Length: 67
Image 1 (cartoon, one colour):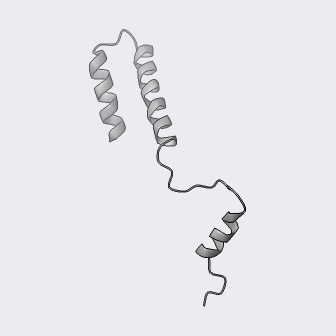
Image 2 (cartoon, rainbow, N blue to C red):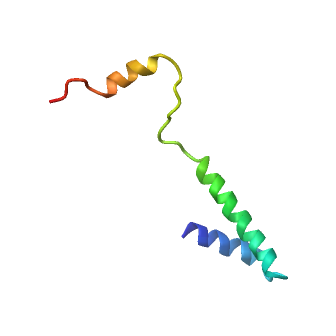
């Protein structure tokens, strides 16, 4: 839905397109921009290993003796 609204907003600004290729270029650019924003947005899970303390942090999260 957000993508549809963004495409409508951008095409409304441009008005008429001289050919299909120009429309395709605009739509492709908008979709690439939205994709990049999505990919670089908030990260809820960090998979990077920073240092050796990560093992102790994992021990806090995972209990070894679970019933």
